Image (cartoon, rainbow, N blue to C red; front, side, top):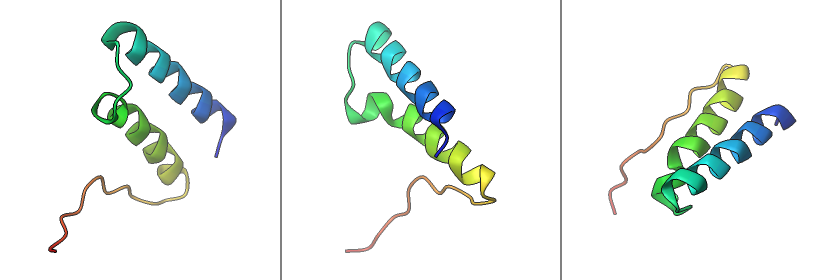
Length: 55
């Protein structure tokens, strides 16, 4: 994974903590999605965010 993408992710996390005051899962979900999506697109892959499972 690109160091630049990871650094951008950490910068987003810092801003989320600064403005939102929280780093729980729902707060950082979009930043993590953006990181994985960029990684996937560079490899011609498609990121599917949530798939329902029958239990």
